[in-house]
Image 1 (cartoon, rainbow, N blue to C red):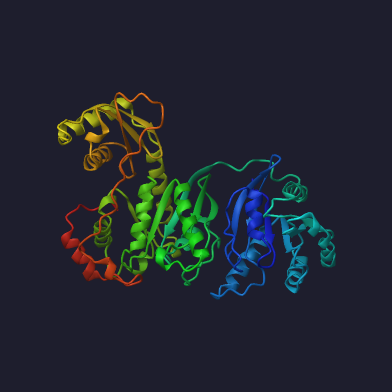
Image 2 (cartoon, one colour):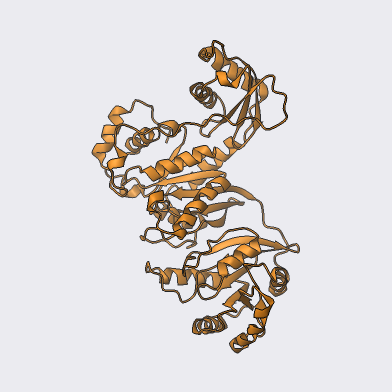
Length: 489
């Protein structure tokens, strides 16, 4: 059953995003004094008194976007109004009625849906008397509210529930099968891919770099299952971040990676792999997330490149991530989009698989016999027992005669052996070492940090411009120097 939709509208800077965060009880939308921060529809599911509804934040009505995206923002607002069951018309009680509030009010007269007038920024009781000014809008007494102080939150939720259709919202939403984080640098087609999954114009798509600013959860269904795709802002180099909004966007992208079950790292095949791409891949590795390298816009590059050529190039750029599968898609034409979703589901199943203890110990014993650890501190490292302690990521705990006797290179060898001979072929494995005589009941020690992805000597990336094009000659140069096998693509 479709969830009822409650849409927040109003002029810029009346606190719409703060209201969504307050009602949701967590930070979802970026909140910043800059007008026009919200462009896309930002949505979350709210539960109150056993009823559920989808709360949608929209861009400010009447804002002139400095990137000439005003028409796109307005279209997103209108789509939200068309889907709404209840509308929250938000005004600023401290500023009083301004001409743009009256313009928003005129626009809502033709909607024909319940409208609740909410006077935000009522941070202290003394401001409530100013609400009488808003009677001129013809919406009756405004509901006082303070997103910053969380005043009248329960009263507002009660008013929303009364305005909702009586037969809707009583059934909880179906559980989410999998969460996908869509990350990458700017203009790699992430929002276009989201729209292809949702099969609607859910995100603003533009050639303007940095169109998406927030992390937006988009729910969609496929084969009777519910998925969440998290669209993120395009990431820039940290030294290139020009303001608070871009800083928040970067932080939200990293949070989206942590929240996700599978991460899709997007690339444009016409451009060289950049430092930003490497930084994102390192963060994905640090979080032990299953990942797919998604080469989007392949229709623009296939005339001068083959998938084998580009696979060799990517493998040389990311030698420590040779287990990560790749997908070549054209999101604009929805080509290979659903095959990519199926691949992501396959990785998610791998991440949640369990290897029987007997099979795991036989694998560890075989790896140990094939290559024992080198002598350290005049002692030989011994592995007594292995067990899988957790899934997602698969966490293997080894009981040894001393974790210090197994250096990082040998741990990488064990992980690679496990990956080659277990169901965990395309996902990261977390390895933890314990001393056999450990007696405390605290958590196991964290494994030594994996080294950063080494820079290749084939191309000096520090000398390349961020948006410089990738040539076939450079790819051939990388291929000739790369002796690793092809990925299965």
